[in-house]
Amino acid sequence: MLIVGLTGSIATGKSAAAAMIRRLNFQVYDSDKAAHQLMGPGGRAVDDIMSVFGSEVVNTASGVNRICLGNIVFADPAKLVLLEQILHPLIREQKQRFIQQNRLQRRKAVFLDVPLLFETGGDRDCDRVITLWCPAFLQFARALRRRGMTEEKLSSVVNAQWSQSKKCHLSDLALPSSLGEAETFRRLKRWLRTEKLI
Image: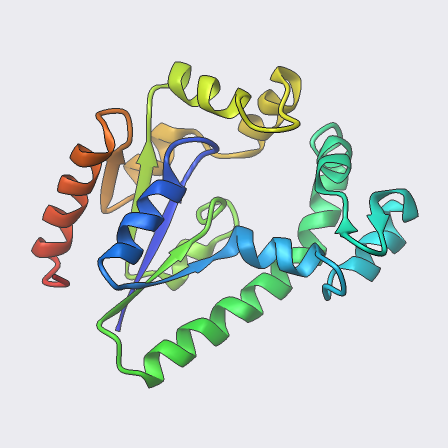
């Protein structure tokens, strides 16, 4: 079974590409969704986050307030490291379970949608890597439309990630998301055909 990493910096079109891959009937592991579940009501990471960051970032009904937590960790790199030490092992565990389940079902390939794939060393688990990219001006315009995003916070997020050019250089496919969804989908399918996956 081929394991394909799907990554990209913030607001470069990774979620749209993941949706395209699902339309082609591939299984996609979504690490952001896994993190949200871990931090949601009753999530496995909630108690540890509360003990490290305080009860003000947690609401018993809705779990961790991710905007409040984001404001804390992206203003202080040391606190971001503390959060990653809580979340990354739990996410890795879920990811391995996903891979194992799909291997047992004898799937041809699975995709791992992981924003920090290279930064966390997750690319070592992958046979191939696809990186979504777009010009910086478009990336910033897209990101600033997100709820709770500010220019200062966006700058911190971008600085915590590897550069788009570095990720593209290390990837098997650098997939642009700035040419329209139809063109992105066409290039993705062409690559999947060369890998004999479709």
